[in-house]
Amino acid sequence: MGNIIRSKRFWLVAPAVVYIGFFMAVPLLQMAYVSMLERGDYGGVNWGVFSMDAYISFIFERDLMDNLVVNTDYLQIFARSFGLSAMTTVFALLLGFPTAFYISTQPQSRRNFLIFLVTIPFWTNILVRNYAWMLLLRNGGLIDGALNWMGIETGGLDVLYTPYAVSIGLTYTYLPFMVLPIYASLEKLDHRLVEAAFDLGADKRRAMSRVILPLAAPGIAAGCILVFIPCLGAYVTPELLGGGKFMMIANLIGSQFGAARNWPLGAGLGFVLLALVLISMMVYSFKFKSLPEESR
Amino acid sequence: MKVDASNPLWRFRGITSTAMFFFAYLYLPIVVLIALSFNENRLATIWTGFTMDWYVTALSNDDMLRAAQNSIVIAVSATVLATIAATLAAMGMSRGRFKGEAGVSAMLVLPLLVPEIVTAIATLLFFVALGIKLGLLTVIIAHTVFCIPFAYLPIRARLEGMDPALVEAANDLYANEWKAFRRVTLPLLWPGILSGAMLSFIISLDDFVISYFVGGAGATTLPIYIFGMIRIGITPEVNAVSAMMLIVSILFVSISFLIDRIRY
Image (cartoon, rainbow over all chains, first blue to last red; front, side):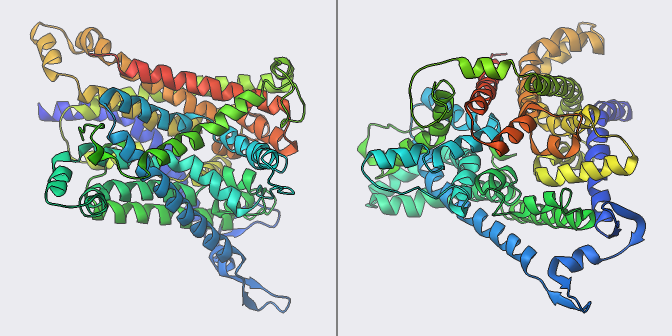
């Protein structure tokens, strides 16, 4: 009997699992394989010809004498991606925690509505959202215009197509991921603990730092992970708000399949990015056993 | 946390003002974009009057309409495929624990964990290796993959809240498996299925990165078309098309959210 039930369930689960397995897991494995192949002379790859060139060219390049010399171009792009992602995570936390706290102190019916407001932008088109920021940030754009109108001569804001614009756009894009898990942990927080702290003579600062923040720590950690990781793989924001001048990892990967035509390098970089993401997920779930509901 | 918000003890300095700033930051670009799409002036910064002209121009652009048609064909196909697979999977996963459950769960949400650009190039390489010509079909296949978890999660959540005794009662009353599903499970489950399907539909409609790499020349979707327009420059037509996309997404999410609140 148990066997029959199990086999019926097997057939229910099979289509989705087989589909994702065949069209996602297999391509990911194949990508790792392609990263170890030789680059084709006219783009593409030489199937079956192994080479470690992709990983070597990540750090080294050949000079005119055919010697390997260190080339930091790609490393710089990785460093910039990490830097921008870290900055974005900090901004998102500074904005996200107070907002989550504010929502959690509201009456129930209002909370649901506010959480709904937080999630809406996530479902709208990412290109459109970033385009809207172009309208706001460009010279002669809305913010520039408003500053001039208030009598502050900007002489052109010159923010669009800088790392600042990219950071503003990234923060905007991933902010909901910070608020939701923090809200989930604050919502479960027993308010009597905070009141007990007050009764025992703690001032607000102390109640916040010794009671509320420690209890919200798992949500804060989840939020940081959920902002940092997708940031690392951001493609659209640096493309539009950075004007293609401030490449992040994803743009570098993408360009290997466009103008640069170096598929093994693109596949290798993709594999490195994937590994970074999966490792941080694993470290996180190892540290905080169970993820809050929203982040699963 | 159930607190009395009127109690001054719960008022921490800067909390309310930061939250207000947060919501302004979140909605300012959306409001500005929609407002500017009705601006008569070609130079987006100065408001000179209300007009619907840009919408008329955008909607009479054949290339854009073709892109929109591609987007809808892709989104409908991917949604149907993903919702069927996700409904079956959610039902399979809901009946107690089994060996390998963690692995299956991980597989079902794998598309949410892998960065989009990695999915895009891995899928591109896969189709190239198999010698499949890039086009609408390849985009539909790729979209179905990442739509599955978006359909799966709300359906699963709905099933989780359902009383298993109801199906048992149907079985006791001599309903066979199919009949119990059709007459008991499905009527209770449909809000979850519909809400999952609508989320899949928007996620597919909005996708840019994966379509861009897997689509090839023949499958220009609306976001790809918009990307091309933005590359050329900021124009009122882009504002109008973008505003339409925003409104469609917001409408769908709101409906999905309301459906999901329908009680058992």
